[in-house]
Length: 401
Figure 1 (cartoon, helix red, strand yellow):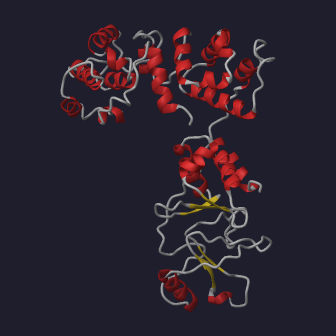
Figure 2 (cartoon, rainbow, N blue to C red):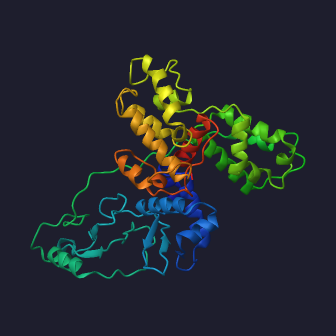
Figure 3 (tube, helix red, strand yellow):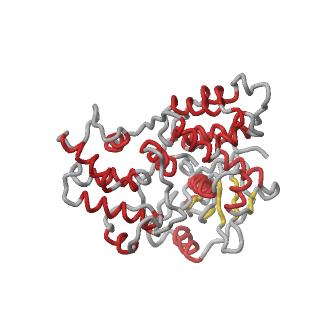
């Protein structure tokens, strides 16, 4: 069974690659007779080898754009997803069908009676030349009352093409898709290296995994040159390039951590204060929110004395404190930084103290979930450098899933 052409165009114009991936997965899992999929989020994610969150986001997008209609079931039953193979339109206006619409027939002699055709949460009315769905919609009591008023010509004024009891909402345009990143040079560097081109054959799945890894590295802030240097270093190590599957080896977090340590990594950041932290608290040509350059060294000294643990684990919190303390000049900067540092050390078991009391004293700070939950298991690992710390932060918060 093919993927609906109109849905591919919708994803091309307004969606992302992951939306097409999930739609193709639904088509593969679909029961051909009913054009329905009965599967859980976890089952779909395991089939596609992507995270459940990615599947959830794409299913929500496909439902919002009328590509898929979801019938929600209570646990332990699974939801039912029906793929729509014909672009839904409104017979009156010709526009894409609104799920809350009431559609009336206008092509019969009884048009003046405003004879109702359909009314439901996901009923679609097709153009005359299209093949209509052979389904019967069951109307609820409120729908019947509305239709009775419309047919009799009495009661409140009926607005064609919309539910008269439905509150009008402002138009929300579909989000623009991200521009596609050119990974050709990096992929060619990896799979076309003379030392491996004769000994390894890469499947389509391997290339997909490699591109996903490269996208994650770039989304995490690493420049293309840095990623290229990591690939070069990886291929220079014999037991890595001769592994059973070099792509999976390169994609592992342990290997990437080692490559970061062995490469002069450069992280591209948009926030000038974060760039200031990455540059070892050197202003250079950065346009920082505070004009007094004498504060730069004071900030660096304060972080070294009171906040090294938090700096090498959660550099974004250092940035937040600097931005909200007038460039570190506020009296609260030093004690707040110290309490943050102590909270991380107490959770990690490196310092004695009451973590609940420390957390409460930082109620105004946007703490990550693991610090709010005082979770040692999920505590972000300490990096070997500030650059690596920023990379870890960007990977966890900005990488494509």
